[in-house]
Image (cartoon, rainbow, N blue to C red; front, side):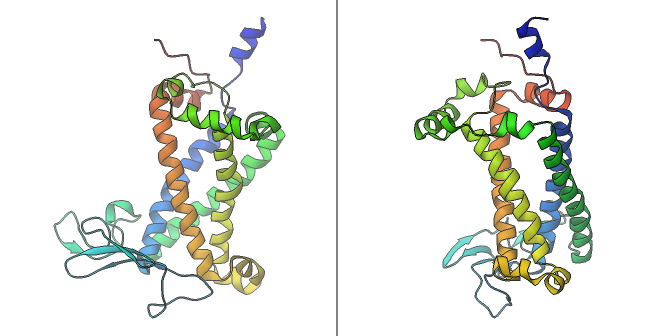
Amino acid sequence: MTEKAIISAQPRHRFVTRLWHWINAMCLIVLLMSGLTIFNAHPRLYWGESGANSDYAWMAVGSSETMGYLRLNEMRIETTGFLGNWRDSAGQTQKRAFPGWATIPSAYSLADGRRWHFFFAWIFSIGLALFMVASLWNRHFQRDIHMRRDEWRPSHLWRSIRHHLDLRAIRHSAGADYNSIQKLSYIGVTFILLPLMIFSGLAMSPAMDANWPLLTDIFGGRQSARSLHFVAAFLLVLFFLVHMVMVLLSGPFRQTKAMILGVKPKEPRE
């Protein structure tokens, strides 16, 4: 076989990467929606070890009889119809923080929300651990994610940023190697955000706090761990939205096929 044929025969994404991608996507969706159910039980975030209604919350979703609002420190944003005060499918006004269409289950149940959350948290955590071991074994991290020395140069990073702002370049990037911005994004998500979600979640557990209080102390208290858990969740949602925009711009059918079958996307026709 020619060198070109050998290269084209190589999968765009290895099987372990593809499998983890879809399991991870399913878990994160369920974890986010069940997490919003848990958040609805007390829609306020604090720093430190404890937090109650009488304590100052740096973030809160609240409501009155006629309006909903989001408060970030001293800034208050009206969110009527979306957060805090919204109408359900029967036309009844509800004053929970997040609406039923964004939560699992859709009807408020803290017990069920916790069951969904903890079950998929175990799948997510075990999957992440196995993915990291497999990626080290098959050299996925070293081959596709590792940042070379020249890729850290400001001029190289600036070219990657410009590439992401060029719609024509994005359309022709399907099947290409990851650029610096993509590598940094995947490094940040895989090695920082996802582990932060897991360990901050463990730090909120009373059992973990009783047996391994050092973990809670590292985060500065259970409420600080809760705040960081939701901040990390927000950043993951932001990453997901940017990721979906890039997929749509570069060819959703070709990219989805590559993530299902592993084949390299073909160059789009002019």
